[in-house]
Length: 418
Ligand SMILES: [Zn+2]
Ligand SMILES: [Zn+2]
Picture: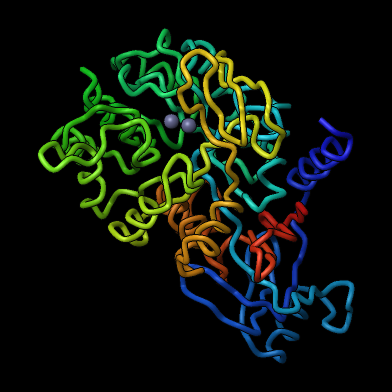
């Protein structure tokens, strides 16, 4: 890792461990799930959004209310028409900057910094399939990090309860049936930090495990499965609230064997993950997903350690991966081994290549992923809700270039990360 990146990791980690600052931004073009507004301003204090509006007089009085002098040019940010969005929320990623979220506390700091400087203010850390004792150790690392900083929302266990036939880049030696004792063991090690767990519902104990995790406050996800339509539907009825990376690592749409995708699409309770990199899911299928599940598509990256790094040799769990032209594949069998996508790029692609309306593209990277865990409302994990630029919401903000959609400045819970 370069010295510049090392310094960035230190700065981001220190800012997240520190106190929130008052923030005042005006002359922005606000884009969120509620729509677009020009001449927009936002004032934040104590890590949440205190007030928003479009009139300069109200802006000045809101500034004074939180102790900012509206005449002080150093304290006020003039967005000069740049785009203001909520911070991006990635609920499925494994790493970045040559490190994985399975790599211990330092690995978590580094990979998180890689995503944070590209606008992902909050992240659920995906843990790859491993022997159960290793998964338990990785869960304890996530639990400890959550207590230190506001940006880590918890863990997503991708495995070990996956279908062998749809294992993707997960180690087949470690896959298991989710018997009740094993579910208990994971829940105990996690101490409340598991947000999401991907389960193939057709496993012998698949449906009972979905019920068991849901009863413990975890959101089960249907994925890495070979389930027929009825079994997937039973999974969602049993409490699964997410479909893991729709189209990838599952049986696809077929007119006589509908499979798990229609079961997710027809169920308004289900948030559907989609990897919008044009490689995992090609553009026409991304557009199809937006068409048939409006307001329920959550962009995820499934990003691995090579994200925002040069091509070359990397690891995914214990398995060797080779990255060529940004595409990660297992050395052993050529299976796609996660992506090198950033949510910043997923939104850029949606707006500039696919022509998806900006509020819908931003919604897929902010409010919809937050909704999967009830984080769009006040909650015990984040306190303030996530996903909109509106009073009472977390002070998670991005200032973005209106043409390229490149992320400039980044705040998480009122802490400036970039
Ligand atoms: Zn996967
Ligand atoms: Zn994954």
